[in-house]
Length: 161
Image: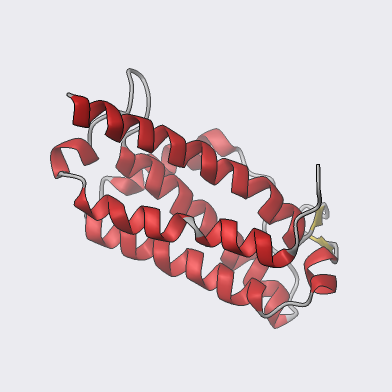
């Protein structure tokens, strides 16, 4: 697999913003409907993505920019995701989209200001494990694509409805 440049990764990571903004057009009745039996809603998925962005921005990316120790730890992601679903219930569609765009943009702005060397540099996180911006982006870009595809398939399905 070819190694992607920082710029390529930034473009891919940024590409979710227009998609998320487009979800504003999704009628509310579909916003809160599970995308499949036993699956999350569009709102749950978006909140899940936004809270991971917030977590990594505040605990790692921002800390790297400020030259402070990283505080991110390897969390129980099932618990994190369950909390995201609960938090989603408190947010309007508009607020959730705005929060997603805010944290994704903060990550993009911060990463854009780093050199390639800084992106590759390995920092120690709160668990003393290695963290690099490149590895973070490399793991979250496919995560984004997975959830985007789920939402797109759901929206296609309800349009055929």
